[in-house]
Image (cartoon, rainbow over all chains, first blue to last red; front, top):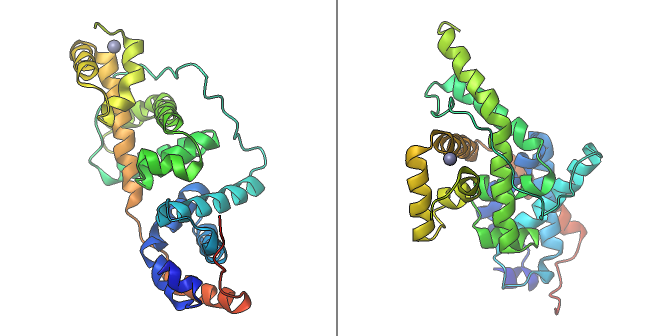
Length: 192
Length: 87
Ligand SMILES: [Zn+2]
């Protein structure tokens, strides 16, 4: 299909991207947290992919290439919105010490409580330095494997593993104390 | 090998992703059996990942696909088809 588009059959591009419409939007939404902006970024990403299709190399998977374009668009927009964004990290930093609490072990079955915890998780994720957040979104939300994540970000597989581990530990460290209080509040005041 | 808590923390991701070698995995498991702190850290981290995965289930905005393809058509009219480029 890529060859067809390059041969001038632009209609083929519409078919080519259909399977990826959802994941490109999800990538943008996970970074921007705003539906209108995510949609706009997704559109920009597909237009950019069309214009640059001649540069696509078949060694990479098409989906990986598309997600990388979407991520770049989302990142650029995020930087304009939040100029103070932390995006430098030191891969040689020492280990992240997790929160050593034993009172949050179960996932709430109640929908409302689950929603509440999910929004705490999103907020904590949005506060991670960008390079950790990107790896976490690609692995845990986009379900890209380690190799695809490395290709998308242009980093090594070892860096992906390390950043993912640090991102998870940072989230645990920040969230475990908050989540422990969410569940104990419910236990003490069951009528809430 | 007997692992202390700090060692185990470094293996939590590998444990959750099932990428540890057999020996390390067994060592981590032996530690988790008697260490309540580390097993709670493992559980809370796993819970965060499970709840994060809930975000994969969502509805696309109504009309998203139609608007996308309409905008693409417009962009295609304005710019010529992409040219193949040599590396
Ligand atoms: Zn321990």
